[in-house]
Image (cartoon, helix red, strand yellow):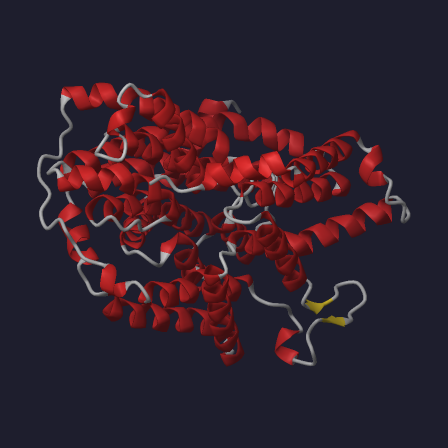
Length: 501
């Protein structure tokens, strides 16, 4: 089967009435989540995982994927209209988008964001269809040693690409690895780090951790800033960009799409890093650099294209290698495991309809977002104006119901509350929780692959460096660690992540 017959199979799978309905539900909910500051796709997907138990695997994953890239659209709406990004990846969009809105060009800014996102999403879908199959074929030759080294490289890369202090990122990864060890050891049957608590014998559910860190923690943090939230734009007019706007958009959209596609594959990269990088690049190459921060349309087109491309390209390592490049992909892997699907390269060969159906649904979802979002801007404005102190109790109740339904255990609700408080503390200490969640997801998998590799080598750890692919990835990881420890690199990294303006 060639690429066209595979895509045809994907569209046949994604274009069924039920899957179109779940795709529409996902992108609509994702946009709404992106519009409402303080929740985000990670917490939303975590909350909805129990609700997907009864769905077919394809429908569940299509809906969850729609929530993820739909949130990239919605986050730009609040960034432009209220100067309050609904998503981290939309922080840069607020710099020029909000200035355009204050000058009466909110409609053109929103249309620019939608058009750039649709183009980037279309290109990313094509790239996923082209590059995922050969990457999956290569991954089929991987053994336990290669997978262990690949995951080690992924965690090291997430340290380099994490915001804030390198020491904080390293500490968060180690903490995540330790949390992943809680429970009963599969081989020996011994309890590890349970402290005599029976409820921890099966380990900590990653949904509980994600919902606490990204849901409850964000709610507590946002309550501090409720008084600063106000809606400046009540009506949006003039949605169609002018011919001059289109001329100024073309270059930024193309460059943002290219940069976002490259950065989206990297562990710890994704939409946020792509949008920051695209804005910084555009500010250097644009002829209108003097207008940046004052309402430059390039400052909206480039990051919005980059964040959507980055969001969708992060599906490549998840679908082909079973490796999450960000917390949302970690939750997607969790959803696949819940549905009885083993993530990895075998998905493409054993369940081609699922694999290609998800890819085809991305383009369908992006088309739905383009058609839906501009007419529904009035609804999004009304949603933004709802006081946050009226929203957060409903969100908390939904979090508690979702967590309780996992195992019908009140202990999980208490555990979620603990991680919520921990997430708030992390935010105060400027510790990004994403590396911790990656360590938590990858830790048990790394342990299992290391054990398999040592069993194959009869306990000889040299198997990790005598196999060429494994050794290469470990060398790259060591080089990255050495770069991180260099003062010059650390200083450059801090400047790169510093928020403009």
